[in-house]
Length: 216
Image 1 (cartoon, one colour):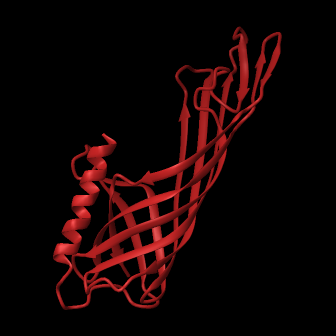
Image 2 (image 1 turned 30 degrees about the vertical axis):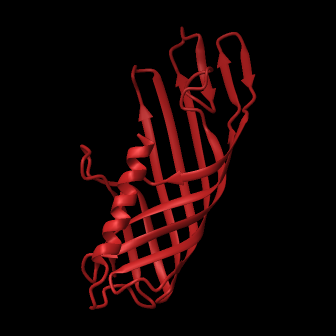
């Protein structure tokens, strides 16, 4: 699957170079804003608005960027049972754009990754054995909360279909450090605390979606 995604991205970049030779300028200028969503043309939900990214061009060759996602989930599978999660991710960064062509804008940059997730479970049934759980939905760690920090070096390209619309792709290499939440479970006659662990990942990362952007 990863090889197919990488091949698709490389083919897209090749097309961007091939079609990026036109002469009329389409790329943004200083003080322009851009907004992006993820485009997955062959999926059941072609446009994904769960993650949004914005850029402000400080000049024709540099831009401040910020991406973010927010999600909240609440389940009540039974009258007295409530499960909740909340997740927030913000990714500030900076881009340096190369000359490219009038339509093609290759760039490199850096991006931070900051995320947090909280989870909880509560059962108000007087006969329930498990009363409350914080840090996850179950004592075994289903929907476990976490905090994450990361930093990525990025490289990508935008192809401006028109003056106000572009498609793009992007690769990155960096690290992510994740600390998992402690799980505190309160039972009818007991209490349990499970310490959270950590996870460190270093290596390449790739957004398999096509970035669909608009210039304002």
